[in-house]
Image 1 (cartoon, rainbow, N blue to C red):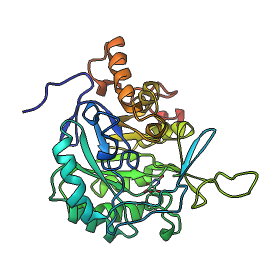
Image 2 (image 1 turned 45 degrees about the vertical axis):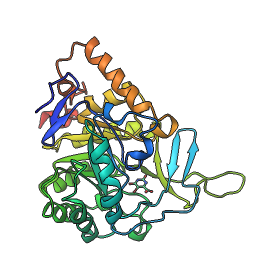
Image 3 (image 1 turned 60 degrees about the vertical axis):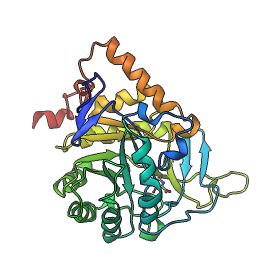
Image 4 (image 1 turned 120 degrees about the vertical axis):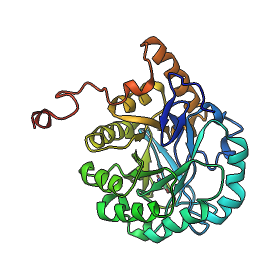
Length: 322
Ligand code: RRO
């Protein structure tokens, strides 16, 4: 039976999200890791660590380093591999997460690797759908060029995966994209049911005393407060081309951050590295949104989506005149 509609609830991706706040991929493992410190079923959903075909040990420590504006990471896709996730991780999610929707993040070096992972996991229980990670900045085997920066490659991955599953599919895009139009259109034409923007931004933080990078792998992906304006802008740009729901992520630590993503055009919002600083951040964002919709007499949170008041309405002044 369907849950009673609430002000923060939305019907998306063929199901009900009780609220629009999810934990981002790579910030909550496979749920169990964080379940001691946060109540997962208070959230709209969670996205697992990216799963690859083979187990990966990941990159040398330290994998995470902080600087004034946020953090850099190069975890290097550390994960137990698709077979182990199916056997050891999905049963826990099936038994323990009831109200939050679970998306499994999938990564690979080649289009074939993505579809093999999806094929292994698809008929297991415990999750709603897949977030296809087309944008890992730390995949050195691909020469540092994520699929998401090449619309043709991104479409190839999505087409392959689409042929293997009927579950909802999100495509996760990169922030360093000069023009979101071609890649947004490519992934949705290839069968994406939603689009997540953005992954971390390539970054390098050096220790001025030693000249060495602050993380073991050298360069990494930058996240935290400085990514928020980039992510909100990406969602707004993507919204001009998207026919599917958008999921905003990057620099969300508070309700006031999440609301910007909704206004820019995202239907769902993920909390990423803020959970490393305080694991209760996502729960607090939900609480703040509950107060906000009450204070503004919002009938349903979906009414806020895409209502940013930009010059020229939803476009630049030139586009509005087109
Ligand atoms: O594992 C990582 O180093 C990683 C991944 Br897969 C990703 O998508 N984004 C990121 O910042 N780190």
